[in-house]
Length: 162
Image 1 (cartoon, one colour):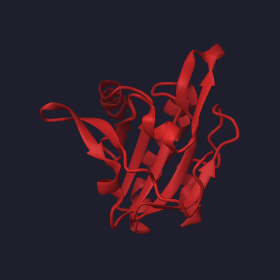
Image 2: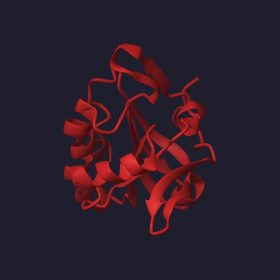
Image 3: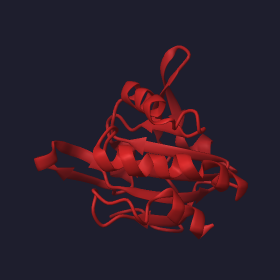
């Protein structure tokens, strides 16, 4: 069953590339006492993710932060090397977004957002969504009905919610 508003995010670890290489990041630490927008994409460099979803948060990063958001995090079931390169390629890094890898899909499975799309070669991936998390609790959840669409889960929709 998928996570819903009012529930706590699971205490899990994601990956990013740090100064020494791959490093684990505790999601509980990133959200404790903070207001965080967390959005997920089916895959780095995939068409809608690359041309619509990440750019929508890059465009709206300053406005979201002006509304009290402490951090904007993008999660994908990819490895941390891909996420780092993708953040650089899209300008997400320069805009201050954190692109974190859910390499084994454990976070995605724990919140019930995993799906498969074999015709597209996507197995064990994340559904497309965006959530506002305050102190580890999901306050707003926008889930797309189709992984190829970025409407309710985009940066503009989250900004309008605030």
